[in-house]
Length: 182
Image (cartoon, rainbow, N blue to C red):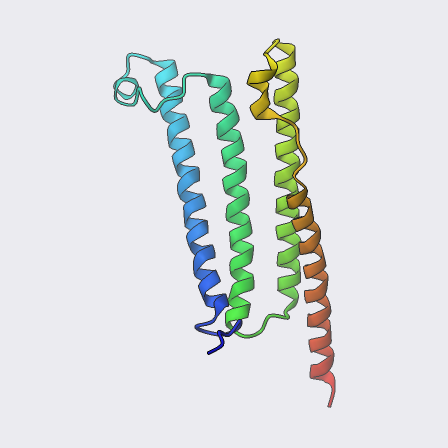
């Protein structure tokens, strides 16, 4: 028995559920990041507060690290949520059995843009942190976790998504031409 790629009960239906779960996970992680950040800020501002004593083990006392991880986590989670939202739209059309719609081409372009923006942000943040670490004379061992490296798989994915967007654009155009043919 062959599994279908389109329609109800297909692989697309299964992937849509996975994307929905990923969106909820990204929302939950974002909430956790900000709750941790708020608790850490309260504990830093008022070490005698009940929150500081209750959450002493989970607070991040290094404000630079707190800011860095909060910012990086927020960008990652918001980007993941946006990508999941666009993918959800794509999978809805696949489940409906109508993949070649102009909206899917736009969704793939937007996913490519979000991935590109996230990677540029990561690179810029890495460069900024490395500059700060060099200014403050931090050893290379400590700076190793912030190494500036270009992730070729992300850029390959961005280019692949741009190509897919063009393919879906062309498919939608051909479908419209076919509808006008007698």
